Image 1 (cartoon, chains in turn blue, red):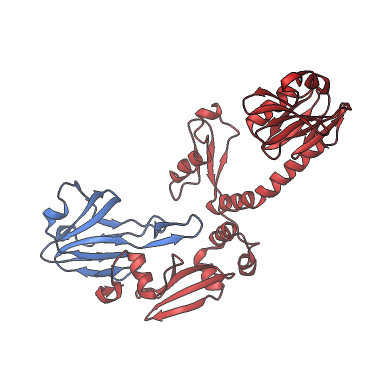
Image 2 (cartoon, rainbow over the protein chains, first blue to last red; image 1 turned 180 degrees about the horizontal axis):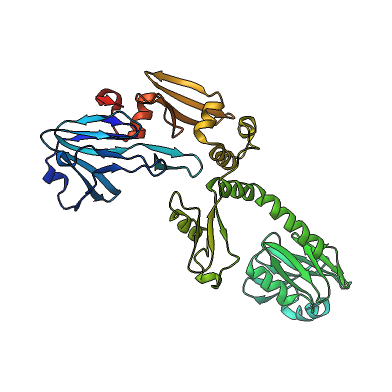
Length: 110
Length: 296
């Protein structure tokens, strides 16, 4: 697992066909993994040719996956150091926090 | 019905008891004649003309129906918000379970005084909820101005609190104001925390108000300022806990960013007890600490 700030990349062992089976995978053309809603800082691919970001609808909501090519890819962010993802498929987990006001769980807003 | 009417009905073989309606009987008693519903004497006609009305605590539709049916005219009974009232067309009284009618008056509490008391009791009961609602609205920082709404209430975009919140959730993070098609204006107002202190928040007994005040103060800032108890420390992570009284507490994970050195505080549910569990919860993983290879 590789973490960059509030984004965690978890390697997926299953082949890509199994991950997308019966579900539509939408390609994120700009290579943005997580948009910074508050600061405007994004977690994004440094080189678009080396990897692809997909959004797949799940019953719980959209899930993001990164499909990294043979050369690996660097993920950049304005605040955090760059991390390098080796070739493979990764599921993106966004950090969450507990809201004591509404007593529910929500994703962290960067 | 009055005493003489009731007495005239109790004759012959029915001189002691006569059926009036379903589960309702006219019965002769030592001190008068009673209308009995199930086992409660809901009306008692005294020989001197006085009448006792008694619900026995059963403020049901049937009880009110039977009392209204057999009470002397123009007296009638009804209930308002679960409180029993009796009136004769000109004056009204409140009573708890029973009341005596003597001539044109009763020994109940006058309706005006009773209604004021009921209103005050209701306000008193609603006060904590209203206070919590006020603070929660303030913490969310989204308000509705219905002044220029051109629609009827049921067509308005903010017709319910739920609708207003749904519309408010559509406000983009930077968007401060939005006018809906009905004319209602949704606007953000940044919560002001200058009157809130850590002590005042910690002393707050209402959990909903406290959570709202924490949000206004800034949860991260509050956790750092309130001198929380450190439950566990592992590398750059610390699990903090803030105790509010004997039973309630809030927990958060304090992290130091390896890239910038900035301190982040992320709230976790109150049942998370270790750093490892907190990290697993935050990133929705199993065994985060063992599996993570790079952290920036």
